[in-house]
Image (cartoon, rainbow, N blue to C red):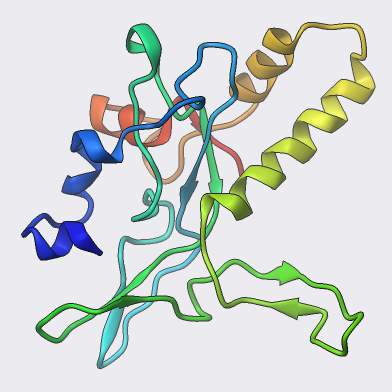
Length: 176
């Protein structure tokens, strides 16, 4: 990762302008989803970038338009693993990758865990929104967004003692 080459360390680089939520995610009408780690990993050669419940090293952080808190929510999307050697090598590890269902059309495995990303956390939140939409088909998008936000909690001790750093990295809440 270029941030590490520039001497910036995880999670501190998440506060830098180049890690901000980008367009269209900073919109006040969007439900912006970030990612958190679902597992810890540490062996002789490498370790996860953050512990379980910490913001993922690839997730974007707020604020949005007019200083709005973004992302709105976070969900498990996996974690990068960094080597303990110098120079640091960033990669993925099955222990920190989100398990995914896959097509078996061409004979592949039905499940796999070899990648990470907000692309894996966002569909989980989209599913929750779809279920709310079934219950409230005539309601506004803003109500559905509010229900998602109000129905979730920050991970670890973040709910009991939230601070500005946690809010800027994870939004209001965490779904899991």
